[in-house]
Image (cartoon, rainbow, N blue to C red; front, side, top):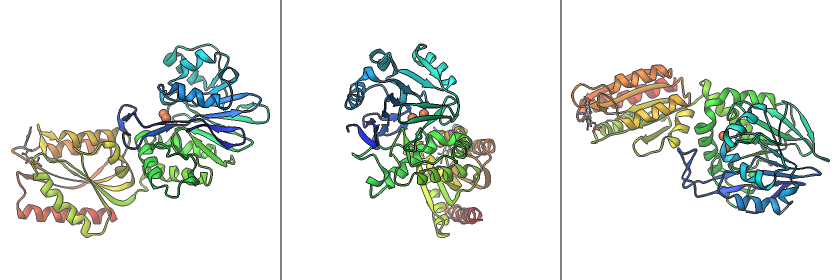
Length: 398
Ligand SMILES: Cc1cc2nc3c(=O)[nH]c(=O)nc-3n(C[C@H](O)[C@H](O)[C@H](O)COP(=O)(O)O)c2cc1C
Ligand SMILES: [Fe+2]
Ligand SMILES: [Fe+2]
């Protein structure tokens, strides 16, 4: 995709990535892709806002050259130092050494440690305004959105917020960059939530703080560094982020995420009975086999729903590893304050339940009830499983 003018003399010069399998080396994007959106302002002073990951350097430079030459760039604004937005920095410095890098003081330190660059870097103050000629940029520190050095950049004449990771999402762009160019936004909304929970959710408080900090500023376009540019209704994605952030404090949707694994089908058999009980109450239920589903796809359900049902056999006196891995990631991402229940098969002495209870205590999941059984569940136990499902669903519906 060539450079696209998003407002007079403000261009999108992003790179679509459809060949990276794992974002940050862990989150699958093989099918979905991702975009690294970068922006160019062509005023008396010429500015690039955020860069791109190392790799498609030539493509990226050619987008810049559709508008201006590399030697004419005056500033490079780095809102955030993560290499998905800065990977080409050293190459850019070689071809455009005259361009002054603008960042927060913290980012300035990180530019040295990540890229060994110390010259021609200027740190900006929180709220500082930079005149480009006809246009002006204003910088607002936004720590932990997504790293401690992060800021956002606001263009005052067109009222564009360059928000970097905030309000972004997975999903390569399909030949159009604006929200209003897609009749059906469901793919991007789903991928925005997955991105939010995978990447941003840990920093829920900073997200709400930043939204509060920017609430007095009129915004007509939100231009994040991943995914769609929001010009039809920028408030839409802000409200969504606000809603998703509030899930952290317990305003979750009535619904249950059932995460299970099974080596030989015993726990799976019980899973079907428990699911039958849950579904008989009408509460929304999502089921994930932790051995077969990457945690990236499980986390959005876990984040948004009030209840969690865990099904795990005992394995070396502990939870089955794929289930334990999901719980570890949930703990890492601060997915707390859930109502939970447990079921699982064991062979001789068990141990999975105890392991689960220990993890649940750490992440403040209230364990409502549990059902452990030896080997293959019998009819009596399956009946108990269905009852567990019903009782738990009713407790979640509250
Ligand atoms: C590698 C392996 C390790 C196991 N470790 C334990 C254990 O430490 N304690 C126990 O009670 N059962 C243990 N079991 C037995 C399983 O928990 C039991 O077979 C259970 O029924 C498996 O349920 P599933 O069919 O849902 O996988 C182990 C099984 C395997 C294959
Ligand atoms: Fe980031
Ligand atoms: Fe990013």
